[in-house]
Image 1 (spheres, rainbow, N blue to C red):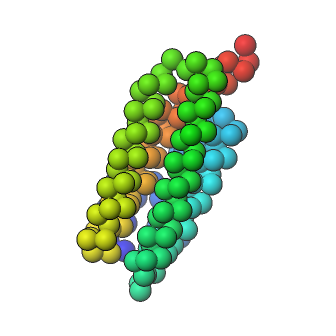
Image 2: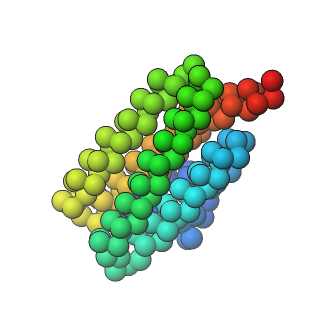
Length: 153
Ligand SMILES: [Fe+2]
């Protein structure tokens, strides 16, 4: 699959042959957040295994994509509830990131049908892996640290 030759994406994938994402990069230390991220990354693994099949059916890719998106959006609700429960000072900025993701996935779901399979997978990778995983490494990690600090007080 051509997209996986890109250096940017190689960073996220531990093993290009199995298409498994390197999970160590995204651990925050907060058990609930991490277990949800694990589940999300499982869904991405599934998605890329399907996308990598030589004759991969676009409908199957779409179904796997929608499953990962649904899970991601549910996860955001849980995170937002966690932030509210502790009056998290950065809640607005974090919520804004979640809204950005919602806009991007809506576009992906709407325009994906017009893209070639390779271009579609490329977009999926940009939004579902690169964008969201960067967010896990920054915003979610900060949130996790705040939650853990509050718990230990
Ligand atoms: Fe998250």
